Image (cartoon, rainbow, N blue to C red; front, side):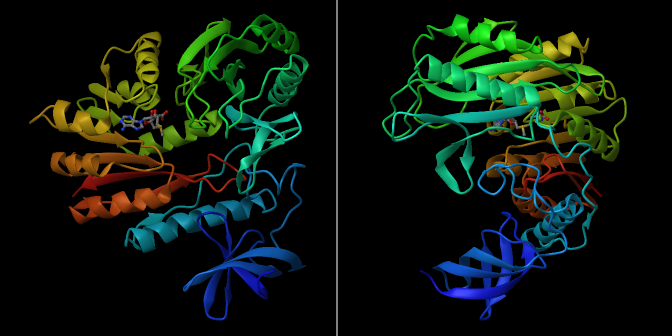
Amino acid sequence: MGKQIEVDIVDLAFDGKAVAHNDGKVVFLDAGLPGERVTAEIIRSKPRHDQARVLNLITKGPHRIKPTCRHFGGCGGCAWQDLSYERQLHYKTKQVGDCMERLAGLPDVKVHETIPAPDQFRYRNKMEFSFHTATDDSFTLGLHRRGAFDEVFDLKACYLQSELANEIVATVRRFVRDHSLPVYDVVKHTGYARFLVIRETTYTDQVMVNFVTNYGEFEKSDELVAALTALSPRITTIVHNQNGQKSNIATGEIEKVLSGSGSIQEKILGKIFRIKANSFFQTNSAQTETLYRTAFDMLSLDGDDRVLDLYCGTGPIGILLSERVKEVVGVELVTDAVVMARENAAANDISNITFIEANVVEYLRNQAPEGDPFDAVVIDPPRAGLHPKALRRIKEMKPPRILYISCNPATFARDAKELVAIGYELPEVRPIDMFPHTRHIELVSVFSQS
Ligand SMILES: C[S@@+](CC[C@H](N)C(=O)[O-])C[C@H]1O[C@@H](n2cnc3c(N)ncnc32)[C@H](O)[C@@H]1O
């Protein structure tokens, strides 16, 4: 047993850990909320900070609320269901401010209050569940336990997805059990059933079920289709993806459509977007509309502008911007996403947009037109932020305006520091809550040349 301490929690850190002070050192705790006093056990000690596990809550904080979900605490999904929503927003705003001040060295950038999500539950349009072998020939299907990537618990209900999606989880679990399908073993790399991915649209009420397995024919597929079809007519398509790679990700290399068209269509700001199993789409449809609307309001464009949409996915930003500008070029790495981006443009009758399948770094280095700069560049990268080589090229191109949408304030702050250092102005940053009860933060900003 490590050393026991009694501390007051004063803050929440960027990764969701609670922060306290003890013996002149910062202590990061696995639980607890600001305003609470706890006893904890130090589990790791470093020269400048300690890590501790909360043993007992001595004084309850003013913002603690009763969590809605029975799995809260043990589930790796939600981190903050026991914190009032208003305080969740407060800490998200504060964390963006901390990143701008400490990581970017830009304390004067105005960080607006985080825009709340309209729905705090049932907001996700995509959830991924893992199959996991247990020691005694049984298996689990659900989400990872908090802090334990090698453990999956049997999920009964998740409040971030629809009730139908919860029924789909139960149906697929029963199907795998009743048909004795072997579950994939992540250590031995044997077995078949790997993941269940459910995607559902908010505005068009369509559901896609994606059963992801190891390589091999899915002989009982008709029976799974029958079981799911009997569940609800809202399930408009069912697909089977095979993934024989060791890396534990719920995407497939070989896809077979078992029923329906293999895609679902979501409506965002009046335009239709096709979503397939393996392509990126923002996971909170209602708040995506707020995200894009906020971004477009901040990026004032005119009818003669040419826009470069980097990391464009299935093309929503460029497609929505296309009617305001002369021309848009979208760049995306994933083939399926580019194919769909082109289809989405055609389905929405848009002809002034071109999509290029390329790595952003390669595109900027070898394909971006010389001497004819874009008026605005949109950057919406994955969590890692801009690749250093892409950033270097953008600094050389010096577009008059850059719309940067980020899902990671830390990498955003790193990139913002570099852009401001070469003369860009960054007056404000607008955090948007796309993911209530989790510590994930999305933000929008526009850099402009003075
Ligand atoms: C956060 S998503 C943004 C998608 C899109 N802008 C939207 O709003 O739906 C990031 C996208 O970048 C793509 N991507 C990741 N790394 C890339 C790279 N090096 N070059 C091009 N695209 C990349 C991913 O496939 C994904 O579609």
